[in-house]
Image 1 (cartoon, one colour):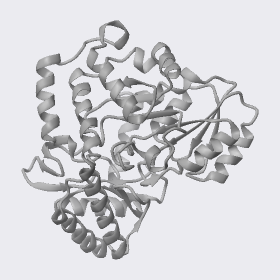
Image 2 (spheres, one colour):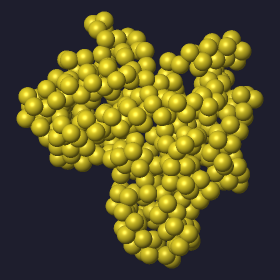
Image 3 (tube, rainbow, N blue to C red):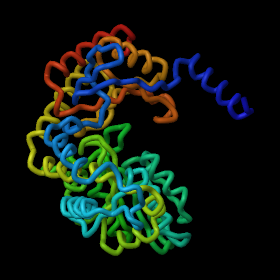
Image 4 (cartoon, rainbow, N blue to C red):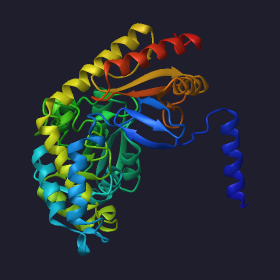
Length: 394
């Protein structure tokens, strides 16, 4: 064992002693909001990104079967060599139309979309103004860029404006934020952000991975929810959450911006193309999102119902208006204990603690789906109450 391996082994043992070691759960099969474990027992899944229940949707499954026969398994190449199929161009056009943008570029994931953006577009004369709670992929992308960095307090417009003043002498300024902050369920104040961007001559970039399909009358996301569809310059997002939970990501914006990314963005140039089957089924998912407002309505009914019941029980939560409902426990050991107790009762949740969330802000992040029945939610709420009282959280 090398010195590095020995060091890591000690670290893992210490985490394990404290009850903070993060183990992966093995799951044999899944049906939307219900999963079957290795012990063949059914449990309610309250920690999935499957907001609209499309991960096991029959229309999408049928499209996948047709697609695998039509397009095969993979392209075995990057896009610019021989990895571009007509289905990729159709998906890019579908996303552009849906988001009201000129053009779109596909990536293997939204992580790649974010890490491949900043160094391609900005240089040392420019400035990036980033929300302090932005996703890790945005943070990593910014680290790769030579632009000056300014961090503002979460969703705090006074803090953002003070950073814009500091960056006034920079050539190009880019404000970047999550549309929905995934650990907190907070929707970004894009209306005010766009107002400030215009005032100080900055561009706006939004990662809307948790907003797409979920927010807005038509599921266009946080830009529709905030009525700023035509004011946000760059959108990134994922095909792997509300759209069915597979994989794939994108960047949408002006034709000039996307053309430049195709020439210079390293994750796009040096990663295998998105599997054609995912491209085809993602088009089907966009069609469903567009025509099935009932799924979104049910999702928000379920979310509001669960949120109100949990608040009434005395739990402290974060965020509002989104199916991400973080239940703040604060103490990491206690949060992990509660998650384990809930798991044992047939409710799949995971505790989050430092460094995923700030110290002393440990939580159980509940994520609601349109596929949850009232019976599922009441079962979970009753167990949250019993275990919360047992552990003296409420």
